[in-house]
Length: 413
Image 1 (cartoon, rainbow, N blue to C red):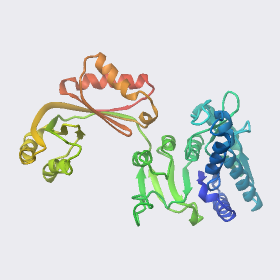
Image 2: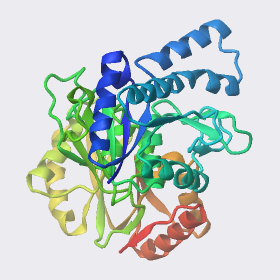
Image 3: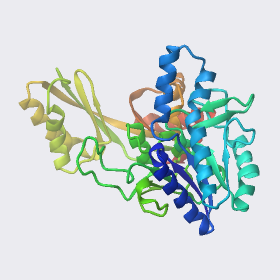
Image 4: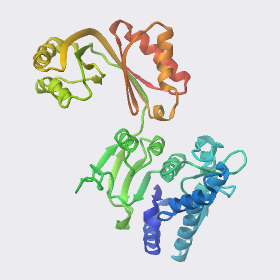
């Protein structure tokens, strides 16, 4: 059993919590688990360092110096946690990005570096695995990297310790990644806003990615791209002091897909005025349809229209349901139907981190005289509505363009 454990800043912010973290690690080692530890800066150390630096330099600082300075929090944490483990009679070795043996190798971007997978995996296999076989506990600075070219210290962006943990999990083919934080797991709502939110027992990587991109602070969204199907993962609270606590389990792995929806759709366009400023207008339009259990495949709102996409077989029924609403409402004027509409769904975690992805889809379609009726982007999903007659032609064009951009998708028809 090989596990990666990441301790967030609140988990190691004082001597008591450092000892609790060390004991929880040792419990796993006693069971024969090969354990790699990723550690964040203690408490609010990074915020304090950042504030100190900006105030003293008035933000006139080179990126190289900034990365080197803010790295101090993690570098100190790694040393203290390693020393704490040693004081309890177990072998440990910390890894500092200034060390040539640091396992996370990156490009030259100092403040938002990208991990180089091939180089990092080789380091992990050649340096960390032999230590694990000897029963030594590696402590790796989270959030940090080492530039391949010159050995300069780089950072993976705020919250980057999560990225470090999952990347190590993939490179070391770990059985499980455990994220130890100040939350009991993934909650149904922000506890600072909603009283008594519920802890979710499990969540998929896709769902976790949407929450993370939407502002949830429990896990860095970029970390999840390193999650594999075979790798278990969970988020637990530090106060338990037990790495086998349940918390929230993260299930599955990201898969890039290009889906050609099989059934014909219809677009209903409701014409109106002052759409944005008329409350409950959307609800009045959708309610009659939802009451009849008719699913919506897309909604668009403009300054003078509301567009709904439904299965074509329900077009007449939906039209009959919406027309009375249009007649009764002063803001609405007319409703029309456009049949023979197709839907293509492109889904990839890479979309969020790939500039120009929309252009990569729209440009080749335009060059081949394929008209897009509408396009909607939602986090990792891009929905493209087109004429039915163009569906297969457009599907092949999009697939080819994405592959040329380095995004390989699984095709679904």
